[in-house]
Image (tube, rainbow, N blue to C red):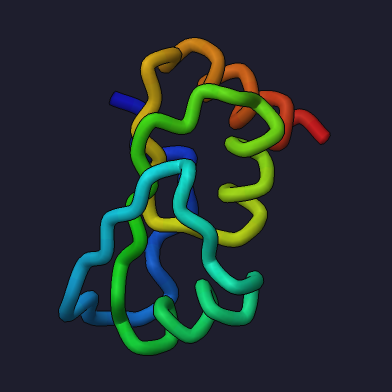
Length: 82
């Protein structure tokens, strides 16, 4: 499990959780921010493409589930190195 590299939820006390698949679309980054500001953790599952991983990390989702953990690790490591 790759947990430590994702940013923690900004809200001090996460009251609710929201799960979404990689095929779901949030209207825009503002929608995701509103969820986070409302103390709702957002977890996205089956994200297997690097571009989608990068985008979701930039949008500060709470967690990503993938079939390719090493690919996610590589994306996270490349962000840390830059």
